[in-house]
Length: 98
Image 1 (cartoon, rainbow, N blue to C red):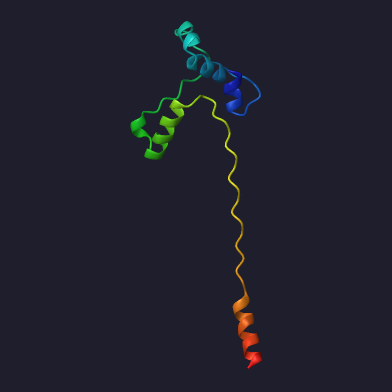
Image 2: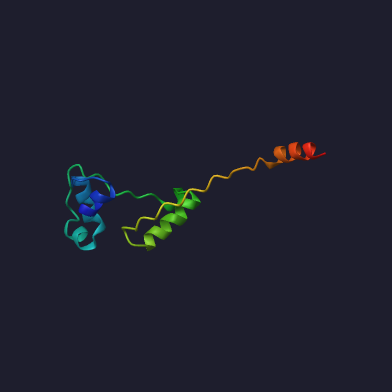
């Protein structure tokens, strides 16, 4: 339940986090199969046919990977390109040389 709270960036464990922890754990889910948790909600279950192809591939990768993936480092911002202003200056110096 604590991990579910952290995943949702919350500091307090609420009934929803308890439900997610119980239903995702095989042994606890079996033990508490007939239990209803007030304000727990339901487990999200989206049929893969309804997902877009990119999300479908991502969902398949996540189902094969562990539940708590590590954070990825943010990509570095591309460097700003400076356009050279030689052309105008070259024309002026070439005209002055003649």
